Image (tube, rainbow, N blue to C red; front, side, top):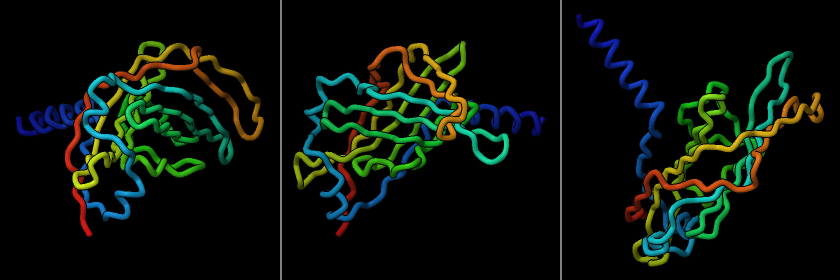
Length: 197
């Protein structure tokens, strides 16, 4: 009975992990870091904004050692509240999909305007979704900088894929069938950023 209970509890935790992003922990930010990374915005900036916009989407399957392949993605996410476009260039994508994972730097670093980033990508015939959980700083009031936390998820249009036949190591490239996709907020919140010396 104890074994069955442990198994069921493990299954519940696994399904919750796949369904929602991992909680971010707060860290104290030095003032210089805060000033360098923050945008000039406030909580009021986001009162009439319903989400972000996906402006770029490219999934490449590339050949690595031997017959092994890996999947990398390039995404542009426009934040209308700050005016920033977060460009994630050729970041590794988990092959299985459907689970949240931390954005890893690809060929370029994660944008410095992002404090944290997680991604969810499902590319099956049954479900085609893309989601991001992003943290960014706003210093509209320098005495009370805000740390924003937003999760956006959208159903994706169909992909158009082209066989690259190994050109520059790329076997297959897939793009969206439309140029922009709205990424509505699943949730958005903010808190005063913990600032140190």
